[in-house]
Image (cartoon, rainbow, N blue to C red):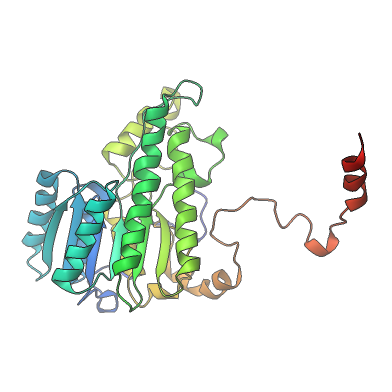
Length: 321
């Protein structure tokens, strides 16, 4: 089965246009910070930016042994990229601030931040979920993103800095179509998408994007699929899994001069064809409602000039005893 798509071509693995070894996508001289760098998309991002010859790749995570494994994999590429590790909890504002400050002190600036840290709560309804479990999704997903985003804005380079926050398609699916994630996950991802939109609007010199990475085989995705009713697990349109390198290579492309053509603040899918995105960049720039979280049906149902306001009825009701 095929997923609906903004572009006609829809990819499940990296393709030539986003190949990090392309000279046009070179990250030479750039300092890249990656959260969740010990596994999954974060680890893949570290490897792909190293292939693009980033000057420094800095990986953050809670488990130093996992970070060391990523560091070893990057060093095996032998491409000259410096790899640094920081064991840090992204919900710890002071620790994250110290990390970004130290990176800036050691390497001069931060050009790119890939925010790949994430959390998926156990399955449960709003009625039955414990508040502490529900709120952990917001603590890691929203508070953690806010802290990372704020520190990046404090320390980022002055030359076209980029932040990419990994998100999920559940943030823009109707709840009746979601049985693979609890409300805490979807609602926290909506909040993250809006944080990215606001960061882009408030900081025109910084490029910020939300990115649905595809459906990647990670511990989180396996947990998510396990939440589905058994009869649905084998019939979902997103199976088989997408290649873990797809969102990583897409992020490398976004960090390049080619990727800079995409207006900041947009919500993208790594599965979408970048050549088609480039062709539609002007239209994306002209339409503030394109590829952002909005209320479908508004404002297109009736344009403002066709709406008939009725103030008298409201005033009459207000005067009624």
